Image (cartoon, rainbow, N blue to C red; front, side, top):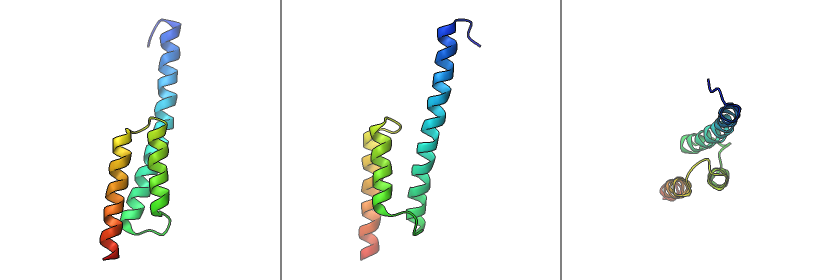
Length: 81
C-alpha cells in the first residue's frame, strides 16, 4: 500500500474507474454474444450504440468499436442472404 496520500487516492480512483469500465465492457460483450446467438434482446442498433458509447467514454478504442460494428454488419448481411 502506498504511503503518500495522493497515491492512496490514485489507487482508489483507479479501482473505481476499473469497476465502472468493467460493467460497460461486460454489457457490450453480452450484447455482441446475444446478437451472434440470435437472442431477441440484442438488436443491431443496441450493439452499435453500446460500442459507440464505450468508445466515446474511452472504455474501448474507437477502432475496436468500428471493428465490432463492421463484424455486426457482416453477420447481418450474411443472414439476409
